[in-house]
Image (cartoon, rainbow over all chains, first blue to last red; front, top):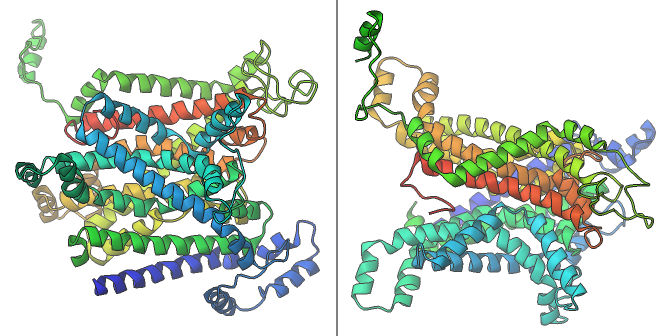
Length: 319
Length: 317
């Protein structure tokens, strides 16, 4: 297990290095002229040269790369071009929103996906199975932002008109302030991300469970007189869940995408909104900061997923 | 048999109709098509997709018939005195948007963008995926482990974030959006192709081809590739809706088409500020998008089933 861990973490570091280098190439080496972008459309060549000098873009590429990496290692991505606050503090301010959104949505999507998949697999071809299947198909085809808009229209706006003001349409309340309000403000964003992604998990779980429940050792477990609940969850789900976990590792990027979309729809002041806003205002340090942070998160989360996978399925550790 | 029939025909005898119990050889494609034709849902999906394509192709005709261009702003007749969008009426069948433009005409033009992005991005992705997957599976060894790792990394990338970063440098456009979509989806195809290639290349006929002196390229594309057509076809039908959703999402976030071009995603973004007063502004592009992705997903599922009736279907059992 220790060797597996070390190898996995080393690989993660390599991936992270590749991504940060890619970001560097995209922003500093690629033919598009960053300093011209920053100086504005009507800038004189002198202004552009000045900006170039201030950003250190007139130095040799390798030297720039060294400074960039050195600063990154210290968690320093410079200052926002617009409100002259450090990117670090901007990100730090908005991290709780995004974290609450992402973690809550991920938990919800796994629970909904796996539970509905098990429900469908234990009663194949029953009305419950059919309902789960059709629902999964609709949500699978639904773009996240469209579901968010539908939620806003029906559950926020229409219910408000009808006098039921339960679902807020925007805003965020910190968990430390009021856990209830925190959850109430996040419930629509959570479900938007969760339902769209849970659809695939429901199908995956159903397929894997149907395969597993046909195995001999499940018949054995039943023959031993174990309770059905124990057979399904302890013996069946445990081995059926590995494709789900693999897919979860792949979908972490999707989770971040969902976060970006949902924050923009529900007016949540998180990192996704920050990223989109900084693209619109060409705020390079902020873009770089969010991209690098998100990639680091993906890499770290993938390591955690792989460890869970190895714990659940000992065969993985050997390969 | 056919020779005999030919002989008889030459002598003026009526051609022999194959009897009801004549044994016909049918290729797996013919079998799949026969199964697909009996699948009512698949036929319905094909009809819907054909209709949407027709709307996309005829968008200028629709605009001409209705008399409103996709980007024409009717600031007097298209907006209420308060400057808000107007609801469905005889002049604007599906109402107007916040700038007094005809929603129906814009949705028709949006279909062009969606289908174009979907089909082009999916084709590019499939092309790259097939080439890389074939190379990885066929050559194996270091090439395979490098390419397979690379595909894993691409698949787990925070793609929307990278799209944001890229667009911030090169500026938004449909071409960039299509490129981004293709770049982040080819790996899914590459994986499937790699897996299939790994098993096919061990077959005896490949060994036979090699002993006849066939080159690597010939074995890959003439001997192995035709066996991959069925899964690739399924993937194309499933990638198109994914690409359509992707394009709509990029345009929704302002990273896709440039205004005033109508795309379903950009229309929905514009409607975000008006959904309280103008439901039609959300509904029509939203429903169009949902129906399109739904039909492609169901059709892809049916095609998969037609080729491999015993395999796992994603949605219908």
